[in-house]
Amino acid sequence: MTAIIRTEQVSKLFVRGNQEIPVLSDISVQIEQGSFVVMVGPSGCGKSTLLNIIAGLLPATSGKVYYQESLMVKPRLEVGYLAQKDTLMPWRTIERNIQMPLEIRKVGRAIRQHKASGLIEKVGLKGREKMYPHELSGGMLRRASLARMLSTDPETLLLDEPFAALDAQLRLELQGELLNLWSGSGRSVLFVTHDLEEAIALGDRVIVLGSGGLIVLDTYINLPRPRDVARIRFEPQFAALHHHLWDALMQARRQQKGNV
Image 1 (cartoon, rainbow, N blue to C red):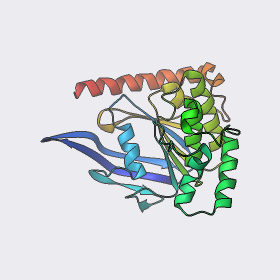
Image 2 (tube, rainbow, N blue to C red):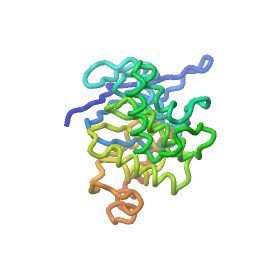
Image 3 (cartoon, rainbow, N blue to C red):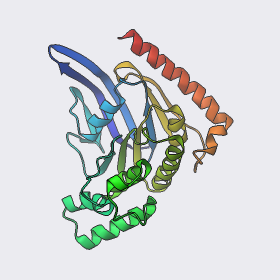
Protein backbone atom coordinates (compact mmCIF):
# COMPACT_ATOMS: atom_id res chain seq x y z
CA MET A 1 0.00 0.00 0.00
CA THR A 2 1.26 3.50 -0.88
CA ALA A 3 2.46 5.68 2.00
CA ILE A 4 0.72 9.06 2.10
CA ILE A 5 2.79 10.29 5.08
CA ARG A 6 6.40 9.37 5.79
CA THR A 7 8.74 10.64 8.47
CA GLU A 8 12.50 10.18 8.25
CA GLN A 9 14.50 10.28 11.50
CA VAL A 10 12.44 13.11 12.96
CA SER A 11 13.80 14.56 16.21
CA LYS A 12 12.59 17.42 18.37
CA LEU A 13 14.34 19.33 21.15
CA PHE A 14 12.68 22.00 23.24
CA VAL A 15 14.95 24.62 24.81
CA ARG A 16 14.12 25.99 28.27
CA GLY A 17 16.71 28.46 29.44
CA ASN A 18 20.06 26.75 29.03
CA GLN A 19 18.53 23.27 29.03
CA GLU A 20 17.73 21.18 25.96
CA ILE A 21 14.85 18.76 26.47
CA PRO A 22 14.67 15.93 23.92
CA VAL A 23 11.08 14.92 23.09
CA LEU A 24 11.50 12.90 19.90
CA SER A 25 14.57 11.04 18.69
CA ASP A 26 15.01 9.74 15.12
CA ILE A 27 11.39 8.70 14.51
CA SER A 28 10.70 7.05 11.17
CA VAL A 29 7.14 5.97 10.41
CA GLN A 30 4.86 5.51 7.41
CA ILE A 31 1.08 5.99 7.17
CA GLU A 32 -0.55 4.08 4.33
CA GLN A 33 -3.07 5.80 2.09
CA GLY A 34 -6.67 5.11 3.14
CA SER A 35 -5.69 3.60 6.49
CA PHE A 36 -6.77 4.49 10.04
CA VAL A 37 -3.64 4.58 12.20
CA VAL A 38 -3.70 5.29 15.94
CA MET A 39 -0.76 6.41 18.10
CA VAL A 40 -0.86 5.72 21.83
CA GLY A 41 1.68 6.19 24.58
CA PRO A 42 2.18 7.56 28.09
CA SER A 43 1.78 11.26 28.72
CA GLY A 44 4.85 13.19 27.62
CA CYS A 45 6.13 10.56 25.18
CA GLY A 46 5.89 12.97 22.24
CA LYS A 47 2.85 11.65 20.35
CA SER A 48 1.14 15.06 20.08
CA THR A 49 4.46 16.70 19.23
CA LEU A 50 4.96 14.23 16.39
CA LEU A 51 1.42 14.86 15.14
CA ASN A 52 2.01 18.62 15.14
CA ILE A 53 5.26 18.18 13.20
CA ILE A 54 3.47 15.99 10.65
CA ALA A 55 0.73 18.64 10.38
CA GLY A 56 3.33 21.30 9.60
CA LEU A 57 2.42 23.25 12.74
CA LEU A 58 5.73 22.67 14.50
CA PRO A 59 9.20 22.45 12.95
CA ALA A 60 11.32 19.38 13.61
CA THR A 61 14.79 19.96 15.05
CA SER A 62 16.09 17.45 12.53
CA GLY A 63 14.67 14.93 10.09
CA LYS A 64 12.06 15.24 7.38
CA VAL A 65 8.33 14.73 6.82
CA TYR A 66 6.98 13.80 3.39
CA TYR A 67 3.41 14.04 2.22
CA GLN A 68 2.85 12.06 -0.98
CA GLU A 69 6.63 12.15 -1.41
CA SER A 70 6.74 15.98 -1.27
CA LEU A 71 8.66 17.56 1.61
CA MET A 72 6.18 19.01 4.12
CA VAL A 73 7.32 22.24 5.74
CA LYS A 74 3.98 23.96 6.41
CA PRO A 75 0.28 23.02 6.71
CA ARG A 76 -1.24 21.67 3.50
CA LEU A 77 -4.74 22.18 2.15
CA GLU A 78 -5.17 18.41 1.75
CA VAL A 79 -4.66 17.80 5.46
CA GLY A 80 -7.32 18.46 8.11
CA TYR A 81 -6.35 18.89 11.77
CA LEU A 82 -8.52 18.59 14.89
CA ALA A 83 -7.08 19.52 18.28
CA GLN A 84 -8.22 18.31 21.68
CA LYS A 85 -9.68 21.70 22.59
CA ASP A 86 -12.45 23.38 20.62
CA THR A 87 -11.33 26.44 18.67
CA LEU A 88 -14.72 27.56 17.35
CA MET A 89 -15.18 31.32 17.08
CA PRO A 90 -17.63 32.35 19.85
CA TRP A 91 -19.09 35.25 17.84
CA ARG A 92 -20.01 33.03 14.88
CA THR A 93 -22.97 30.69 14.60
CA ILE A 94 -22.24 27.00 14.17
CA GLU A 95 -23.11 27.29 10.47
CA ARG A 96 -20.70 30.18 9.96
CA ASN A 97 -17.97 28.44 11.96
CA ILE A 98 -18.21 25.45 9.64
CA GLN A 99 -18.08 27.77 6.62
CA MET A 100 -15.04 29.70 7.86
CA PRO A 101 -12.28 27.61 6.14
CA LEU A 102 -14.21 28.01 2.88
CA GLU A 103 -14.51 31.77 3.39
CA ILE A 104 -10.73 31.97 3.87
CA ARG A 105 -10.34 30.25 0.51
CA LYS A 106 -12.83 32.70 -1.02
CA VAL A 107 -15.38 30.03 -1.94
CA GLY A 108 -18.71 31.55 -3.04
CA ARG A 109 -21.55 31.94 -0.54
CA ALA A 110 -23.95 29.52 -2.23
CA ILE A 111 -21.32 26.74 -2.29
CA ARG A 112 -20.34 27.46 1.33
CA GLN A 113 -23.93 27.24 2.50
CA HIS A 114 -24.60 24.04 0.56
CA LYS A 115 -21.44 22.41 1.92
CA ALA A 116 -22.13 23.45 5.51
CA SER A 117 -25.74 22.28 5.30
CA GLY A 118 -24.68 18.79 4.22
CA LEU A 119 -22.05 18.51 6.94
CA ILE A 120 -24.43 19.78 9.62
CA GLU A 121 -26.79 16.96 8.76
CA LYS A 122 -24.00 14.38 8.62
CA VAL A 123 -22.70 15.17 12.11
CA GLY A 124 -26.16 15.40 13.71
CA LEU A 125 -26.42 19.15 14.20
CA LYS A 126 -29.48 19.83 12.06
CA GLY A 127 -31.66 22.43 13.80
CA ARG A 128 -28.70 23.87 15.72
CA GLU A 129 -26.92 25.63 12.85
CA LYS A 130 -28.02 29.10 13.97
CA MET A 131 -26.86 28.56 17.55
CA TYR A 132 -23.59 29.86 19.00
CA PRO A 133 -20.85 27.72 20.57
CA HIS A 134 -21.75 28.69 24.14
CA GLU A 135 -25.24 27.30 23.58
CA LEU A 136 -24.01 23.78 22.75
CA SER A 137 -22.87 20.84 24.87
CA GLY A 138 -19.35 19.45 24.71
CA GLY A 139 -20.42 16.66 22.37
CA MET A 140 -22.15 19.09 20.01
CA LEU A 141 -19.06 21.30 19.96
CA ARG A 142 -16.95 18.32 18.95
CA ARG A 143 -19.39 17.54 16.15
CA ALA A 144 -19.18 21.14 14.94
CA SER A 145 -15.38 21.08 15.04
CA LEU A 146 -15.35 17.82 13.09
CA ALA A 147 -17.68 19.30 10.47
CA ARG A 148 -15.48 22.39 10.15
CA MET A 149 -12.41 20.22 9.59
CA LEU A 150 -14.25 18.29 6.86
CA SER A 151 -15.58 21.42 5.11
CA THR A 152 -12.57 21.61 2.76
CA ASP A 153 -12.72 17.89 1.85
CA PRO A 154 -9.26 17.02 3.23
CA GLU A 155 -7.87 13.71 2.04
CA THR A 156 -5.98 13.14 5.30
CA LEU A 157 -7.20 13.75 8.86
CA LEU A 158 -4.92 14.35 11.86
CA LEU A 159 -6.74 14.17 15.19
CA ASP A 160 -5.14 14.89 18.57
CA GLU A 161 -7.16 13.20 21.36
CA PRO A 162 -10.38 14.71 19.96
CA PHE A 163 -12.74 12.89 22.35
CA ALA A 164 -10.64 12.89 25.53
CA ALA A 165 -12.74 15.48 27.37
CA LEU A 166 -16.08 13.72 26.74
CA ASP A 167 -17.89 11.25 28.95
CA ALA A 168 -17.85 7.56 28.02
CA GLN A 169 -21.21 7.48 26.24
CA LEU A 170 -20.50 10.55 24.11
CA ARG A 171 -17.05 9.20 23.31
CA LEU A 172 -18.57 5.99 21.94
CA GLU A 173 -21.14 7.93 19.90
CA LEU A 174 -18.53 10.15 18.30
CA GLN A 175 -16.12 7.27 17.69
CA GLY A 176 -18.91 5.57 15.75
CA GLU A 177 -19.70 8.74 13.81
CA LEU A 178 -16.04 9.25 12.94
CA LEU A 179 -15.79 5.70 11.59
CA ASN A 180 -18.94 6.25 9.53
CA LEU A 181 -17.50 9.45 8.05
CA TRP A 182 -14.19 7.73 7.28
CA SER A 183 -15.55 4.44 5.94
CA GLY A 184 -15.57 4.35 2.16
CA SER A 185 -14.22 7.91 1.90
CA GLY A 186 -10.70 6.92 0.89
CA ARG A 187 -9.32 9.28 3.54
CA SER A 188 -6.26 8.51 5.62
CA VAL A 189 -6.44 9.09 9.39
CA LEU A 190 -3.72 9.52 12.01
CA PHE A 191 -5.35 9.61 15.44
CA VAL A 192 -3.65 10.26 18.79
CA THR A 193 -5.13 8.91 22.02
CA HIS A 194 -4.12 7.65 25.47
CA ASP A 195 -7.04 5.19 25.52
CA LEU A 196 -6.18 1.64 24.43
CA GLU A 197 -9.82 0.62 23.96
CA GLU A 198 -10.38 3.61 21.67
CA ALA A 199 -7.24 2.73 19.72
CA ILE A 200 -8.32 -0.87 19.12
CA ALA A 201 -11.94 0.00 18.32
CA LEU A 202 -10.96 2.58 15.70
CA GLY A 203 -7.66 1.59 14.18
CA ASP A 204 -6.40 -0.58 11.35
CA ARG A 205 -3.00 -0.25 13.00
CA VAL A 206 -1.78 0.91 16.43
CA ILE A 207 1.64 2.38 17.15
CA VAL A 208 2.75 2.45 20.79
CA LEU A 209 5.30 5.16 21.51
CA GLY A 210 7.72 5.16 24.43
CA SER A 211 10.16 7.72 25.75
CA GLY A 212 11.52 10.01 23.06
CA GLY A 213 8.88 8.71 20.69
CA LEU A 214 10.64 5.36 20.41
CA ILE A 215 8.30 2.88 18.70
CA VAL A 216 7.74 0.13 21.25
CA LEU A 217 5.13 -1.70 19.16
CA ASP A 218 3.64 -1.28 15.68
CA THR A 219 0.84 -3.77 15.09
CA TYR A 220 -2.15 -4.28 12.81
CA ILE A 221 -5.64 -4.63 14.26
CA ASN A 222 -7.23 -7.61 12.51
CA LEU A 223 -10.82 -6.93 13.50
CA PRO A 224 -13.56 -6.95 10.87
CA ARG A 225 -15.17 -3.79 9.48
CA PRO A 226 -17.62 -2.18 9.73
CA ARG A 227 -17.25 -2.06 13.51
CA ASP A 228 -19.75 -1.39 16.24
CA VAL A 229 -17.42 0.45 18.63
CA ALA A 230 -19.50 -0.46 21.67
CA ARG A 231 -20.06 -4.16 20.96
CA ILE A 232 -16.65 -5.00 19.54
CA ARG A 233 -15.14 -4.53 22.99
CA PHE A 234 -16.77 -7.81 24.04
CA GLU A 235 -15.11 -9.88 21.32
CA PRO A 236 -12.40 -12.33 22.52
CA GLN A 237 -9.97 -11.02 19.90
CA PHE A 238 -10.43 -7.49 21.27
CA ALA A 239 -9.41 -8.69 24.74
CA ALA A 240 -6.32 -10.40 23.34
CA LEU A 241 -5.30 -7.24 21.46
CA HIS A 242 -5.87 -5.15 24.58
CA HIS A 243 -3.62 -7.46 26.61
CA HIS A 244 -0.88 -7.28 23.95
CA LEU A 245 -1.05 -3.48 23.72
CA TRP A 246 -1.26 -3.08 27.50
CA ASP A 247 2.03 -4.97 27.89
CA ALA A 248 3.62 -2.66 25.30
CA LEU A 249 2.24 0.44 27.05
CA MET A 250 3.61 -0.76 30.41
CA GLN A 251 6.98 -1.28 28.73
CA ALA A 252 6.79 2.28 27.38
CA ARG A 253 6.02 3.63 30.86
CA ARG A 254 8.90 1.71 32.46
CA GLN A 255 11.18 3.02 29.77
CA GLN A 256 9.95 6.57 30.35
CA LYS A 257 10.52 6.33 34.12
CA GLY A 258 14.02 5.00 33.51
CA ASN A 259 14.84 8.10 31.46
CA VAL A 260 13.53 10.64 33.97
